[in-house]
Length: 156
Image 1 (tube, rainbow, N blue to C red):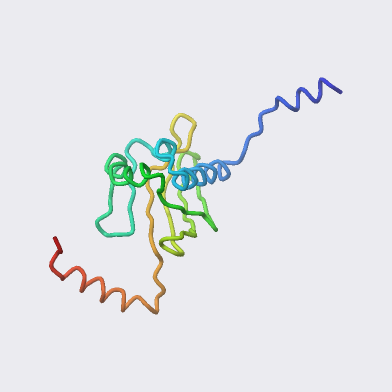
Image 2 (cartoon, rainbow, N blue to C red):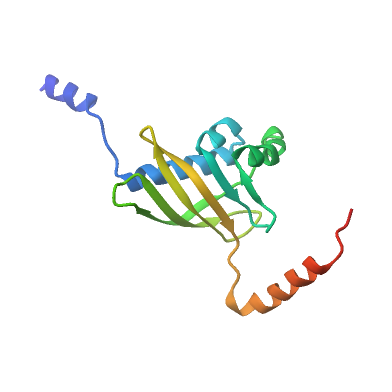
């Protein structure tokens, strides 16, 4: 009986690929909430891209890190919590894409979507797109405001 317990205690528990991807994304969000810059950026693939909510926000990892560093350095980055997530895999299981509904204190209900790739057996974020869903009934008004904003001279 003791041998059986020892065997069971040493057994490696494997999780599904979907659980693995969700664990990476959840830890990535948790690292931002904890302002753990090293842990947060360790989740990115080398040539990853992050798209923010502003049309000007398309960053590679180094650009994004330069943008985000002051927030992490102050001990307060951002707080995203997935409330729903859907993950799909390529036939060979080396690529995962997902979309997630997010609860965020600053942006309100938001959405993230992206792609993870398996590199040396570990899931890494290759692409992330953060967005704020706009209800269809508000789209015309928001479109007009964006056009007005874009046409206004830049403040210096």
